[in-house]
Length: 115
Image 1 (cartoon, rainbow, N blue to C red):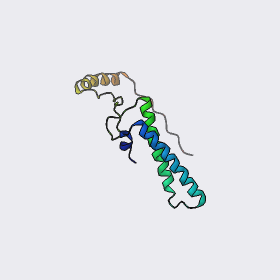
Image 2: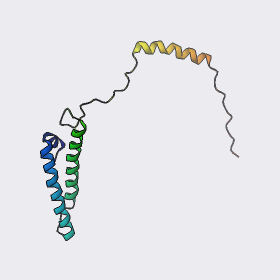
Image 3: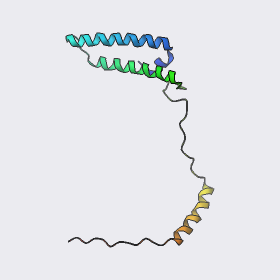
Image 4: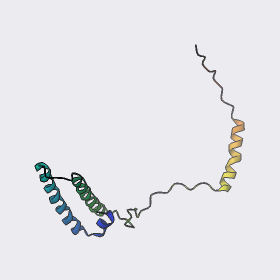
């Protein structure tokens, strides 16, 4: 089951599908207990499908929406601060050079000798 398919369904359809998946999971548990379950990975896939559906239902309850079915958020995250322009860099460079002249060089510590 793809997340894009889940997002296209209505809430009622998703709730109905979740109950069906829970019933199927119960049947798989019985099969496993009786030693009749051949594909044990099927249980894990089923649990993941249930989780996908519940996630979409939760997103809808909280008002989170996605623009595309590609699972990209509609709300853009805060962008990083834009890099300073060349003009601003040129103005800042002389100030840094002036500060470097005013500061005294740090004292060097003597290296410890090995005994």
